[in-house]
Length: 433
Ligand code: S3P
Image 1 (cartoon, rainbow, N blue to C red):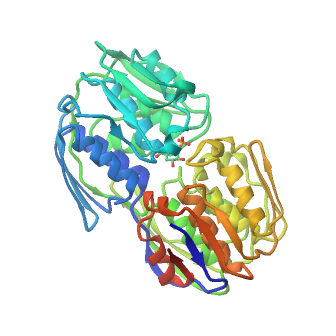
Image 2 (image 1 turned 90 degrees about the vertical axis):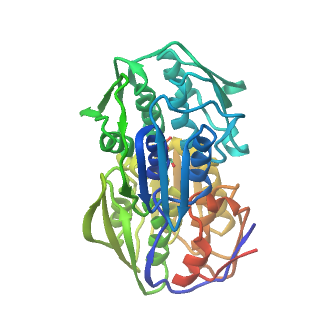
């Protein structure tokens, strides 16, 4: 499926984006293992999170929905899962596979985790090595890539692990394995990363203690208690609407009900440093997560050197940030972002190729990008099957001199079902064919 976007346009109105992907994955996982029924509003009906729900259905968990955003999970308890009939297919989702690897390591049955072509290329050593230290029996294909094969072991034991990279997925994998381990499991992160797992474990009655950069969970057979809450809109999806409104000719956009957990708001800090006019209105709480409405107005942007400490807090937003940088005055420098090389695509390469195809001067660095603000011409961009590359480059048309075509966009449905309709409603001249 390709996107075709007419040049120009004005972005204005009021919208809501689909539910947070990270929170939706974790909600299904913890609810499945809790005692009792959990109900979530705002659950993301994207391919990634539906794959996680399907995996738990295959292990005997009754899950109703999502219907109109509501998902009900009938928890089976920590040891209530049953062996699946075949491999669990996590589709395109690194989060699904890495978090599930942690949970599966402590089960009394074996499983095989598989994924699509992109996921099958992604590095799994980062979870395999520490899970083995905990006593897990886990193996992978050549080069430590999926499929992951987990076999049952007598027991896991807690470890004190220092993460070699800032990764919420690895941190979460180990905390989830820690639910099944004897003793305490601790993870120290080199920089703050999203803390949804810690917040949600605490909400399900298994508190995670933080001491500076170190988080710990106690093992043992203590049950998880069912919990029900509303899942906020995904700031990583809101990022596309935000950048659209900033770079389009005059206009004002209100994005309601967006998660603004401080471990996710690097995008707001980076765009504001570039001169963006973004206001947070009506701050409130949704379950364990802070939420607000975002008001954004078209703004003249300037290039910046992105502070490296903000990188993990905006890790999924660099495709959108790169498009904003291309519309800014002067140079934007992104460094310390080598993790972008191992996302759904090599995002450094995909961003550099996309910007160059649309006439922007760009240099790919080993750990980032140097982007010189300029003028988009029309052209064709290859998304490499990466949802966020597809959505980000669709925005370039707002400032292009001719139509923009994006190839291979079906994966937008992994995180943002309804993207085309929503953005068309706000004023982007986008169609899918
Ligand atoms: C996620 C963590 C991030 C992010 C991904 C979702 C999560 O990955 O890129 O989209 O839900 O924990 P890393 O933790 O590997 O950087």
